[in-house]
Each structure stands twice: as structure tokens, then as C-alpha cells.
Length: 126
Image (cartoon, rainbow, N blue to C red):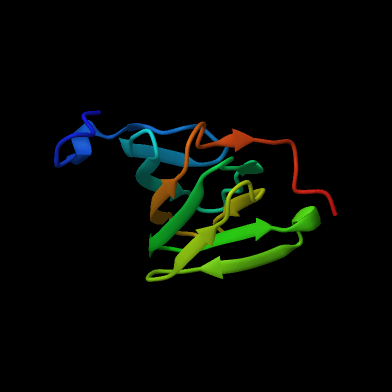
């Protein structure tokens, strides 16, 4: 991507984003210091545990319910709905799920360097 000019990225230019089991990501922008794209969680889906290494993430929920599990042992949780922002700090192990019968859609923007998704076996140690 040309980082020296302002540009529009229409939907037909989005590409498959970094994979995590149970989630669909579409990448719109990937620069040296930022990643931005679209996230869909299907009804009943539970993603794999993962973190975003050196990236901080801001997630804006467009529709549906996005459940976040995180913290030591993965026991902390909350649900975010349309209009909510979710902040995920650097290297915070978490997983998303969708406890409803409708898809959940969100816009994700990450700031950082290096790999933007690191899949792991389970939650942070308790």
C-alpha cells in the first residue's frame, strides 16, 4: 500500500485479514504502524485465544453482540453492542464470541508494529 498519499479503499479492494479460528477479518489498510479492517463473528461462534503483540486495538461494534473474554484464566468478560467501542491493550490475551442468533460486525483499528495477530493455546495464566 502506498503510504505517501490519501486514498480510498473500496470494499472490493479489501483482502482476507490475519486468521484466528472462528473469526472472519477483512483487511482494508495495513501500513508499517497501523492495521484497519472489518471483523465478523457468526452466531454462536467462539474464536481462538489470541493477542495482538505490540498493537493496541480499538474496536467499534456496528451490529450484533461481541463478547470479550480476557484476564488471568480468561474469567473476565463483557458484552459490547452497537455503538460501543472496545479497547484492547498491547499483548492482552483474549477471545471474542457471539452469544446471539445474529452476526456481529465491527470495525477494527490497530496501532503498533510487527505481526498484528498471534494465536495462542489458551488464556493468560491465572
